Image (cartoon, rainbow, N blue to C red):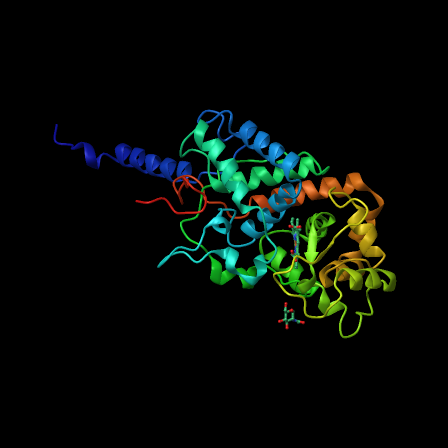
Length: 329
Ligand code: HEM
Ligand SMILES: *[C@@H]1O[C@H](CO)[C@@H](O)[C@H](O)[C@H]1NC(C)=O
């Protein structure tokens, strides 16, 4: 009985197998119904909260859609967007000029509180960002989307990266396409995502460059006159709530009216205008303008791509107790 257990070749391969298995299982992934055992009511509670908030303040739903973009575009869908600035610590991504006009953050806490009451420290803020966007899209007349869950929350804010990752209001369509391509979102999906600009508003500070001192030649002249009435001065007070709605006909519905508008050169941002005229994107714009179902199909596909950007899973990150702050250790 001289053979020791540890040198036996079959035991070594067994250990190797265990090691491989551990490695494989460690690579957690998002899955449909991730909370089915740990918090079976999670998705229902979120949907109920999102619906209640929508009934009281319809524009909360619009905010949840923009939140998904601003969270997922910066590294990962990890709720890094929601962190508040704290003394000697986190500087919030919300302080970036790219976050201008974002609103309703306090109501994320309402959703999170309802979920925490049912299942403490179980459901991530990142999944609340994703699922609230999903439920908001349905409430806003967009498609119903089956979304995976299991995202975890970041342990830091990426405020320094925000400006490099989220395009500015006056960036070119080429830059926008390359930013999206870098996170695996193709041209057609990018065109569909911009359809989110079928709802919500743009403040005058993000518009006036196209109106003053001279009107942008690409802008529909009648629409330019309308926008000048909405934004009568070239230097609007950034604190004044002066804005134009994106879509004057169906301002609270995620529909293909956005594409009809930009084909008439009534897009508010220069990216909206360029989307309609750039040869890489124009054919998709035309198709989406012609067919709302096709737009919704592509919008669903694109939202899923966006919402699965580089998630933290398994034992990465944390499940924040309060979406605004890292857990105390
Ligand atoms: C890629 C280029 C994009 C640029 C340059 C851009 C820029 C902007 C700007 C400047 C505003 C107006 C902010 C304000 O003045 O209040 C805005 C609003 C909005 N954006 Fe985008 N955006 C882009 C893509 C997206 C995407 C991909 C989504 C979502 C899928 C999105 C969703 C929204 C929504 C919902 C609003 C309205 C927010 C509100 O009314 O509170 N945007 N965007
Ligand atoms: C875009 O707008 C910002 C102000 O919002 C301005 O500082 C910047 O120079 C503009 N960039 C271009 C390329 O026009």
